[in-house]
Length: 113
Image 1: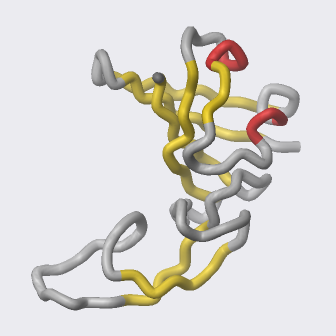
Image 2: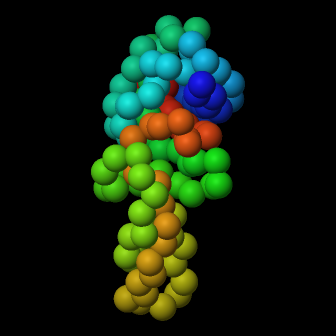
Image 3: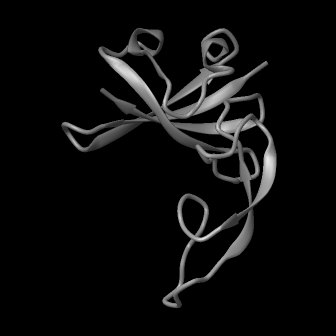
């Protein structure tokens, strides 16, 4: 069964809180994508949650431009999962996770709206 750690950031107060979701609580999150919104009442919160990212069990970050729940090597110049140095025009092929939440995802980042 699915088990997630969800980190919820509150933009009004600037604080974040972490929740552990297991089995039946985690089922509604399976299949959602980065940018999707869900009701906060599922986790006992007021308002809506917008999924902003996450990472899998090995620590590979989720990217919104990689479709599906797969691991994939992507040629990057900037963005999530790529740290640039001072040199311009640097490109690197990095392994990242897709934008869909699957059983392999460990942490989900969300914003309270």
